[in-house]
Every structure is written in structure tokens, then in C-alpha cells.
Image (cartoon, rainbow, N blue to C red; front, side, top):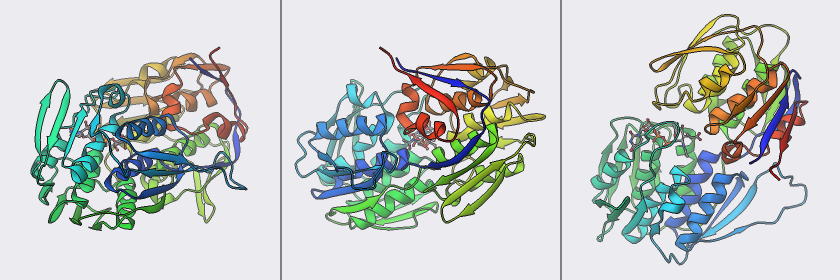
Length: 430
Ligand code: EPZ
């Protein structure tokens, strides 16, 4: 298995192009099942999760083509993928594929909406928590879908089609909102989604669905209204910038010091995280080019943070912020409210000499004067990048094992950091 080796201590200076968002690309690709026409997606990041979903779509019979590179395009400008679900040969998503990536469960919604049935393996838990799908299934039941669970598979049927309904989520769920939204586009009648997730990825999906002919209002608010239509057409859509990648590099620069412009991204996608970074002593300015992150010499101040659904502080930046606060001049309290087990990085950060103790859903971080490089193990996607951030600032050498977690969600991570001065390399498994 590949490893990443970092010699810490170098400040970061330069520019980093931000890729298309993984968590927008995945539902957008899934939406290709809603139409027999071609859906063309631009700015799709080159990530293991994208490749996994392509395999799942392929299994349903979706044709896909990755467009050739155009002149001037670099490996960092994202790829264009054309997806055509003209002939769907199988409405079953098997365990071998769904178990690799939870988001693949979402194919249940377009399959039901277009074909009236789907058989999809239950996704199971993952390193950050149990992550059930009960809210997704009860939303579909509300929309007239009969659900049976047998042999680890969800058999979902709506022989007369999905019908519009009032779906009230008892808690904010991004996956639930994506699923209800996709199912509602081809339903008969109107669907109202209450307590909908307001995440920018939901807005991106809704915008693409609207280009495909869906009638949606309120995306980005907690009440989304969808008037079902009888068919959707093809469309062309560019995936939004990755706000989590943006925040991750912002925290890396905050950690090492330096001056980096994050290009092709937008500050409003991560306002709460940028506000917290300013509080701890990072200078941030915004321009048409992107977001400039600057920290020079001065120490970091501690801060208390609680993760929350958008527009709150994202759970997907919690680990990275914790790495940053290990070097702050004082004590920070970081509360995780979205996932019950998202503190796997605490034990690994301790290997750098970080002082962190857990009290229920709260991590109390006592900043230390310095971190020391160490061999560490990546446990999940965002946890693993927090180890990269710690390694960039630690004295000496850090070696990160199990970097396939990173490859699921960070495009060209070593190249992007190295061109800003980081001493980082991938050691390929022979
Ligand atoms: C999405 O996961 C993201 N994944 C996650 O990013 C992100 O952390 C999460 O939203 C929260 O922002 C993708 O977009 C592919 P949820 P999702 O449904 O949609 C509970 C990453 O690192 N819940 O909003 O699965 C659930 O257990 C990943 O890129 C139920 O109880 O998250 C969690 O506690 C990790 N029942 C909370 O709701 C359900 O049926 C929010 O989950 C569904 C969810």
C-alpha cells in the first residue's frame, strides 16, 4: 500500500487550484439515471470514489465516456464525463459495490423514480459511525414506495410510480435530502421537503436537475418544493468547487504559516470555517481569483467549535481544525454533533505529541509548543488529511500509512502541496 512521507517545517506559499467537489459530483452522477439522454458533467475530480460510482453506474447499464483533455487543460482542471442511461439493464446495486462507498446507496432514488423499482444493498456502517438509512427509507415510504429489507438488501417498489408527498425530516440529513429530491423530480404531484439540508451540494444537485427539466424551488433553504414532471432531459453542468478541500488547504496554510491563494473556489461555501480561522489569527482576503490565506509568524489563538449542518461549521473539517488547534496557545474545545464516532484521529494526533482528551462528544485540545513527526495511520478520509496537516508542521519526518483513504477525496494532494513548498512525497507500494 502507498504511504506518504512528509518532512515538516516548510511554510506554504503560492497557489492551489481547488477541484470539483466530491460530495457534489457523486449525487450529480447518480442523477444521470433519471434520464435516457446524456448528462454531461464538467469539473469532475479524479478520485477513487468517482471511479467506484462509475463502476456502479456501469453495472446498471449506464454508458460513460471521459472526454479527452482540451488544449490548456491540466490534470488539475477536472475532467468532463458524459453519462447516458438510455438502456438500464439492471436495477440492482450489489453488495460488493455498495459496501465500498455509502453514497452509492443513493441510486435507489432515480431507479425508483424512473423504473418503479430498485434492489439496493444496505450500505452498512463505517469508521465514523453507524450511519443508518432509516430517514431515506421513511422519506421514500411517504412517497408511496413499498420497502422490504431482506438478505441485506432493500427491495423498493412503486409499481404505479413515486407520488408527491410532504416529507418532514426529524433531523437534517444530506443523503435524505438528495434522495427525496431526486425521487420527487419524476413523481406525480408535488413534494414538499421540510427541514431539508441546506448544504451547497444540495443546491448544486437542484440546479443540475432544473437544467434537466425538473421543477424545484427553495433549494438552499430548509423547505424545498418539487413539482414532478413526466420526463427529464439531458443537460450540461459544472460541478461546484470542493468547499472541504478549500477549508483543508486553508487550515494547512494556517498551520505552517505562509501565503497561498486558493483558486477556483468561493468563500460563501465555507464562511463559518473562514470566520473561525480569522478568530484564531489567520488573515483572509477574497478576490475574483479565489481566497487568499495568510499567516505570518504570529502564534495561533485557541477557539471553541461545534460542528453543525450548513451553514454551521462542517463536520468534514473537524479533524483538520483539531490538527490546527494542537499548536494553538491555549485550550480549544471541539464538539462533534453530526457523527458519533468521528474522533479516530485523536489517537493518531497524539503520536505527534498533541495533547487531546475526549469527554463524550467533545475533544479538549491543549495546544503544545511543537509537534514531532511520527509514523501514523489514516483511518478515514478527513481524519487522514488532518495527519497531513500535523505532519506539515511537525519537526522531522512523518510517514502516513493507508493513504487510500486520502485518494477517495483529495485530488493530487501531494502535487498541490509540493508546488507550494511542502516537502511531501508518495512512496508507492512495489
Ligand atoms: C454527507 O454524508 C457527506 N457525504 C459526508 O461527507 C458529510 O460528513 C455529511 O453529509 C454531513 O455533512 C457525501 O456527501 C457523500 P447525513 P451523509 O445524511 O449524506 C444520520 C466525507 O468525508 N442519519 O447528512 O451520509 C447520520 O448517521 C463524508 O466526504 C440517520 O440517522 O450524511 C448522521 O449522524 C463523510 N439516518 C446524520 O444523520 C439516515 O437515514 C447526518 O447524516 C441518514 C442519516
